[in-house]
Image (tube, rainbow over all chains, first blue to last red; front, side, top):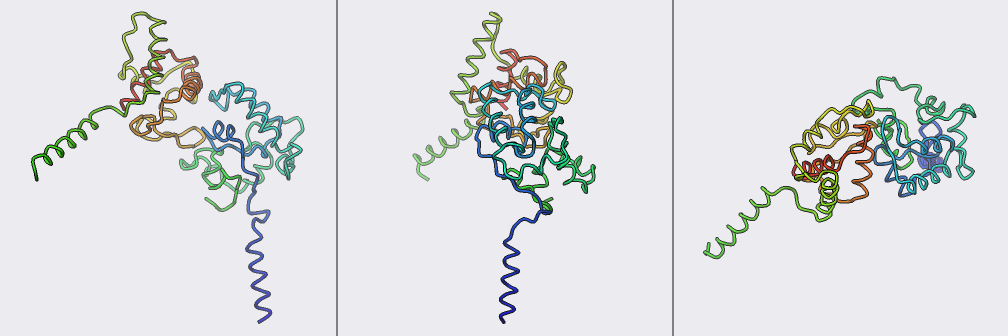
Length: 160
Length: 143
């Protein structure tokens, strides 16, 4: 009986232990209204933790040419968002565990797409390229098509 | 049914019919945006004779040149049918443009300026004129 109780406790604890390293990644959700509204207008507001600050600075400096579209903002809004993104970037002092997102990334490399980072590629190396061109997914930028709670900073596996 | 009840019912039915033939609900904020655009249009061309839903429809559906190659038309993202939802190139749903389906369209001046500013540049490679903007809003307000 005691053994059963112990076993239940173990099973229960394992069940509650949450995310294992190979089940996906969680980051602090964005808590900045302008970033959520303006970035989230066309795609999910991507986690700032997933790119280094140099990437966000470059991207926010050329919103008129944003992946084939003009995404210009008023200067004050643009500055506000750029500051938020840089402060929460992979290499920002306040970001916990950000190093995993820049692992393998050359110091001189300035990726503008999260999907260009070695981290993203490692995590998606088992996904066939054809999956991303599926009309229901459309683009690698459409994280939420497979990671259903990506807008909450949760990129879990097996959601698709 | 008493006569007075009959009259009340008929009045109610007429009102419902009226509401069905009228275009989407008027919005003072949208009217003000259109009035400002009309002033601008008049300033640019004193012969300006008012906005046109037909011109707006043609502009919405047209394939334009001069803009970014991925977005030659409004319909590239907003779908051919403005009463239906569209989709951004990144796969995110865009609420319908037609005011009848989405009454919050074109009633916040900052939003109107932001999106015309971006999308005219993406699609046409230039700012839109006041006439183009006014026609566009007039078309989608009636849609």
